[in-house]
Picture 1: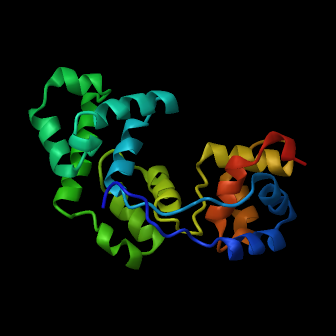
Picture 2: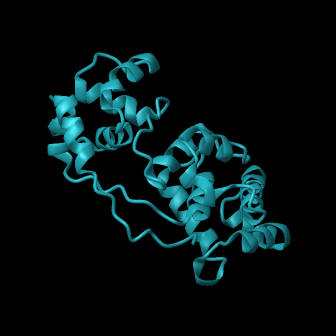
Picture 3: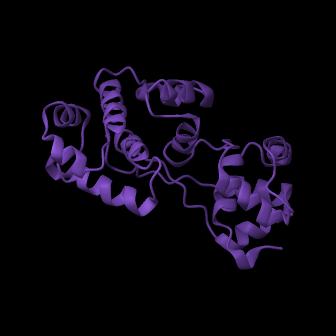
Length: 215
C-alpha cells in the first residue's frame, strides 16, 4: 500500500470548466499548461519520508539522498518496520551517508512509529475533512502545515486546498495577474474565493504557468 500509484485517474473536467468560467486568467493558464495530471497515490509513508528528506535542501540534493536511503531496503521499499530497524540498529556512517542528520533521523523515526502503531489514521482519511487530516499529520515531528497541504493536494487530491504560505503559488499569482508585488495572504485568500471549490487545481496551474503565457 505504500508504493504504487492508484489506478484511478480523476476527471478534472468539472474543475476546469468552473475555473474557466470564474476567472479568465486561469482560463488562459489552463490553455497554456494543458490537462491537469494530478492523480492520487497510495505510498503515503514513502511520500512523507521524502518530504522530511527534502527539508532545507535542493530538490536535486533531496532526490540523491532519498535514493541512497531507499537503496538500503529490499526492493528499495522503506516500510515503517524496516526504517525503525535501520535507524535504531543500523550503521551510523551509512545513516549519515543517506543525509539524515540527528534531527531528521528523529523525524523519520517518529513518522515510522506513527505508521507502525497506526496512530496516523490513514485508513480513515477518506472520511476526514482537510483540517482533520492536517491536524493528524502535523502531530508528527518534522511535518508542518505546508507539508500536510502538499500531501492533501498531490497524494489525496483534495480539490479545494489553498496553500497561502507557498512562495511558488504567490509568485505564480503575481506573474499571472501582473501584480507589482507578491500578494499578501489576505489578498490571496480574497482573490481565490472565485476558484472554490477547486482551489487545489487552480494552484496546480499557477505553479506551472509558463512565462510566455503571462498577460
